[in-house]
Length: 316
Image (cartoon, rainbow, N blue to C red; front, top):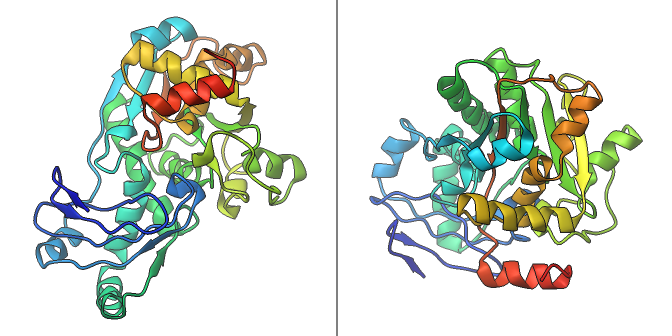
């Protein structure tokens, strides 16, 4: 399959494609995933042309994404709300930060191994969330926040699947001296492995994923994500599928941007009044300078899918 926008050659096997892009090279990508790589296993074989080698030693694969204040969500929350639009990464998700960093850090080894496997048509596993290089890649998101905002926000809202974004954001906050910033970690009921682990005080494997937010579909959260709860101010919150899907629709109406239910879980922190609840409980500052919501992705959604989800939940 050809992707004309990025001149990317893709082979699809048993799932959705994910790739790293550049107009100078091609990457043959075999992917097996349950929607978003946060909840699946990404397996890669690459055929890379020489200009990529220069890129691997230089600029990152991800792009700096917009951080925009939302008038509509600010009105709902009663405080300034900024949206970090990770869904406009060329791959449609924040994932390229971690996976791109992983590929750059192990470039020489990965390149040789990829060439070997490409000859045999084999697969190489790139972990979707549970690897230090993945977390280090996501640190770049917080660096961008620091550059754009200057001062720390009153809270940072993230969706949690396998916990890679949470681990990376936590590391980023520590790096820029913002480790005191509260993190609101959002999940949907039925994909709540992080919340279950916190309550149990140890890693918990869910028997299955029953949530409609399949992109959050990791049955067990990364151990590092659970460790972060001892080092940072993390508030784990779980919303119902109906709240996440409703947030997707409201965000589409407010911002003209369609995201998937996994991202709707994060947005539900605004639309459901959760921020006000946390303020009333004394967990958040009564008058924060701002709150940042990571708009994590929008790959596994289109208008037809949204309508089907709403119909399934009786929201027509």
